Length: 388
Ligand SMILES: [Cu+2]
Image 1 (cartoon, helix red, strand yellow):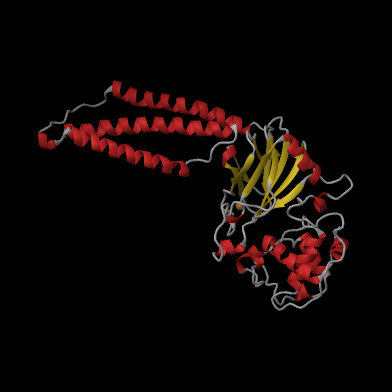
Image 2 (cartoon, helix red, strand yellow):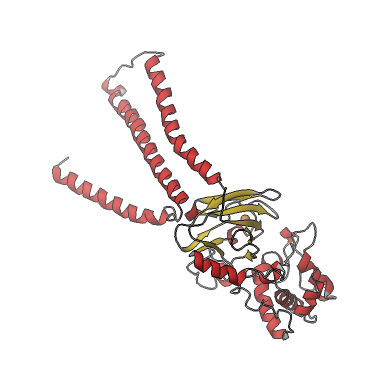
């Protein structure tokens, strides 16, 4: 090959590599926001280089041998068996490589499982299809809320342009202090889900009837997004996880706003203000029907639409009955209120008592007056009266 040809080929190759590298950043892992994620990233790179060296070495020798010893140049095969030196080498070298890899990897896995001495302990419950968060211990103890997908239905159905955080945004974000060890205990209420925040290097299955745990320590402020990573049913892709890491003093303020007063019921006041602006102390004051219906539609879209559908026709696969023209729905208020508050045993209908009285009244009013249903409105005080 002529010198100039070689130069242009090399230049072309570099250009292609540089373009590839720029492209690769978008496809690489999320940038780490915890020391654990940094270590995992480092391990990944080191092991990839080891793999690359072995790959090039083994295949290089193989291709060279095939080329140099090909039949067309008249090569005669050497006949030998049981070469002790070669057999020892191809056993011992891979064994050493494996140990070299296994040593740091085992250290990381053990560190991931070390959930001792946390600053804050949060129970995470997977539901079809949302996450429940209960702050069990540490600053924020007693706070408890449900986190559901906030992406508008129109974006999912394609009638509106998709937002920046499409399917990665929620109504209530998990808020944690930066630099503190957060223990996450996972479980689930229906099927297996998995809680995963890639930037923290924290991932744990959430299994019904079991408690598992993991931990993370956010090293920087910011909003970090992850997803359920265990195929959990038809809306598996619609239950993202969003963690907001804030400065400790900001966290203290957030806790003061959201921690229930010792006397108040946990569930009633735990929903963060942004999601339920009216879920305050005067939650039971009578509301006009129009307001109940419009608010009820939002509550329905966030909580009920996955099973009962936007048309109110229900979903056979979930054994979710149609609400349109349903005699129980339009009958006396007592049974619909109890169903939403307590769920229905042995069905997919879970208790929604985490919603405020006003939210439940709103959604029931909406359901009782939509899709041809024509029943009277439900007022917050009526819901409050049925709470046990
Ligand atoms: Cu899931």
